[in-house]
Amino acid sequence: MTIDSRPEHAATPADGPSVHVIRARRLLIGGAVGGVTSATLCLIGFTIGYGTSGLISAALAAAMVLFFYGVGQYVMVLFADAGARTLLAVSICSYTARVVILGLVLVLYNAHHEAWPTLTPMVIFLTTIIVVAGWLVVEVFVFSRLRIGAYDTEYVAPGKGEFEP
Image: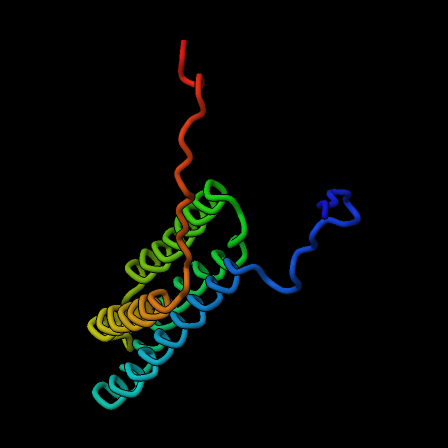
């Protein structure tokens, strides 16, 4: 039996996304579930504690965190099959762009905070921390359940004369 290496007999990739894309999607969905669940709890809790001001503040903070993490993880899904260098470059560019956008929002708020008297800074701070923690806890849990194989190749000794001068 011989192996035919002609192009028409080459193995075709399986239909559907690669294992890397599937793993990245699982991390995105898991993180989103954790983030949205935490955000919902914050919205309920801070609405009860602070009224409309708490609801608006918690909603703003939760939306910022979910946007920040959601876009970042979605970029990872889009580039899951890319090489390591490309993935690193894309993730750094994505992170930098998101931090700059968040920084601009914070600078604008700081410059015009008197125009937003309904926002409660403590609610924004606590909601941000809680939603980030919720996203990360579930994402770590999902990551720990991913099956990522690690295989070592068998050692093969060098042949005679390969290292002789």
